[in-house]
Length: 253
Length: 308
Image: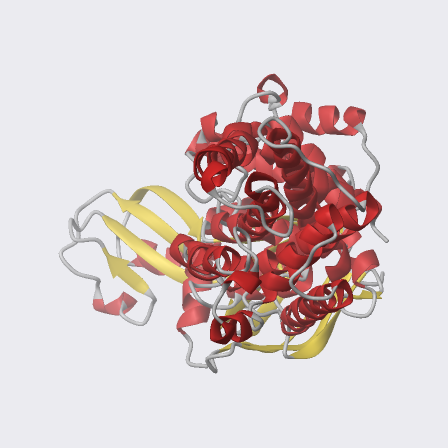
């Protein structure tokens, strides 16, 4: 393993986060705080409890997931797309590093950023609502697993995109709607039966459900299924990344 | 001496069907400066990119210091530094950070001393904390060289190193390249400036339509293919070349005051003695004479004009 290379890519990407701290950290924290104010305090105070959990607290896992998913995808997509756009990718491709090492550097940095952000948002949430975490280890596991999986998705998007517009299409038009419709702000039990069935095709439902279970021990689907679906999604992403590296798709042609 | 780079029957056909490299065989000797010349689209950059691992070949093989670039890519790539044609830099990074990044990327432990020496050798030391976006084009080019040298490579590829660089900086760049060669680095450069190859290269390769059409020692190439011209400044104006000299390779200038004689340097006899005798016999006197050898550029143009 070329650990120096992994460290170089990782620290380079992390340095970009600190250089753009307003955009990378403060902006998502502020927008999440606004969600808490609007949905948690203003609207939430008029909502009934869900499974015995106050609405403000109920939406915390969903809001963390919302940020985690969008930031994982955006960070990883931009991280690999920008060197492609600027041409500096030549250096990575000509270096004595394997594809696994490239992936560890870029996806590792993107996942780290979004996990840190998720934890900051959790800390911010405690300023607005009462929060307890029933299974902190499981919570961290879901956090890491989701961050890595969606960073892999972001990496794929960053390779596929050939314009800044395309870079934004998937996060804006697919990931964000799926997250909003994935039970971030409600329990899927609250939906009509037909929509409950349709919602089960949304992978984000399983992430939010499993993550929420680690907080409140309530879930829309069984925890094992949540974990399994996340693992399946990760395997799909890894398979696509493997194919990209094998064929050199948009990297070496 | 075993070649440091050995290219055998290399082929590259792009997805759209364009065949950029058509069975190239080429050996690069350790410690030499090799200039790869060719018109736009000839395959120079594709060839370099394959050796460096940026583009996948569709056939053939390349070894670097005995290491196959596919099977043993780590060992092969560790030995190579690449300065690309485009000024592709991390605009928001400092010179120091980007150079340090490159060293790590190539698997070398941090060495502030080496990076300092590299930046100093390229006159970049006083800019080490400057963001790359604030540098001039010439400085950015030197940053790219610093990045390529950060991991102490044995081989340096310079793809159009002085494109867009003014004359003074270009000559400064040549000095840098010479110093690198003196330190034992093998240099392969592609260039549009034939003058650059003529000035620096030990050997010259010409690529056209994805095929190497010539590889030769620069001096031998110029001696073999170069034609010389002898120009005589005449004492008296001539209206035409006398019929007694009609068989000679002579051209009379429009002003009638100079005669140019073209001869082949590789011929056993240049015919100069005979010509001077004939001029004397015909009462043609001259006040001065001058010889010029055809440049590498003319040789290059003649080569690539030949039908494939």
